[in-house]
Amino acid sequence: MKKIISVLLVLSLVFAFAACSKDKAPVTDGETSTSPEKTKIVLCLDYTPNTNHSGIFVAKEKGYFDEENIEIEIIQPEEGTATELCAAGRVQFAIDFQDYLAPSFIEGLGITAVAAIVNHNTAGILARKGELETPKGLEGDKYATYMAPIELAMTNYLCEKAGGDSSLINYIQDYPTNAAEALKNNIIDSLCIYYAWDGINAEMNGEYDFAYYKDYDEAFDYYSPVIIANNDFLKNNTDTAKAVLRAIEKGYKYAIENPDEAAEILIRSDETGALVGREEFVKESQRWISKQYIGDGEKWGYIDPVRWNAFYKWCFDNKAIDTDISDNVGFSNDYLS
View 1 (cartoon, one colour):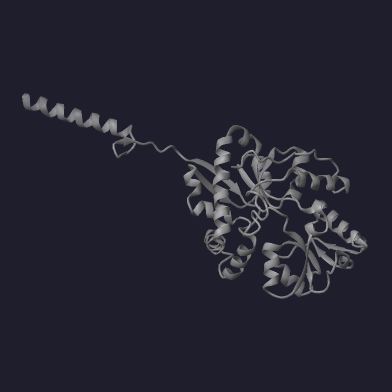
View 2 (cartoon, rainbow, N blue to C red):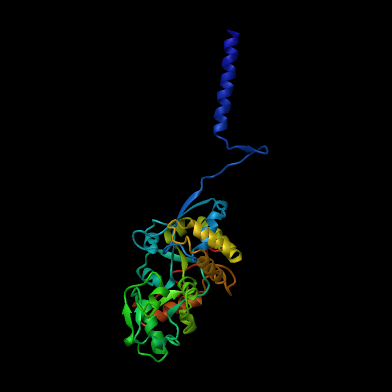
């Protein structure tokens, strides 16, 4: 009987110890530590992965999101635009461009730009060599475009400002996947591009003319691209939003210091496989844009209210939009470090 009682006592102690162990995290150096569950965040790119996005992929691979206790999922838009997905609350963060965001702010879609990926606008017009000494050269061009009202207004304005007749521009709603090839084969004569991608590709494959928008009018030094966030998410999860941007900022700073490695990370991270075999191009693009992320700015991500407001004022004054966007609407620097 004594033996039975002793066995029962031992078993009860074993079970009690096991139960206590379940409720405690692993013990290290004599102290109990806890590992709270990570916060799941979804970020939607504006398009397929490119060097605009490198800092985000760097932050993921280097564990910067993990350091902030964030589990990040990076997706591409399948139904609707990235901004529409963000406004609907299906993703917390997305990437878009200030010129394309104007309708969202007019319609009150409930999104806010929270960080500028690149400090200055790198968009402009690409054309064959010798055909775009000034924007007046757009006269008679077959100009490829998505037909966005703001882009058309800007293109017409630049042509007119240079003494040209914008009514002579032949707009074609057919944007090529390879701008340099389309120009080389005379499929089109000119189009709007971002220098870091299509500009570098053109430079590596021939000689072309390129005109930055911002060089012709200060109002065109708008923010392109930016990271946006859902307003309800920002209101209810302020600390998490700041944590996400801290991780992303570290990723872009790393890409600035290590452009070739950032390019390699981008290539590895692209699940489409489209960048495989284009390593030298991606590295050239990364080396160039890494110098633009902060550029002459004081810190990564900051949105200058003067420049932000000036662009929307130009859009309204020149009838590119039919509703005035009030000053300081649509962006916030409050979530940056």
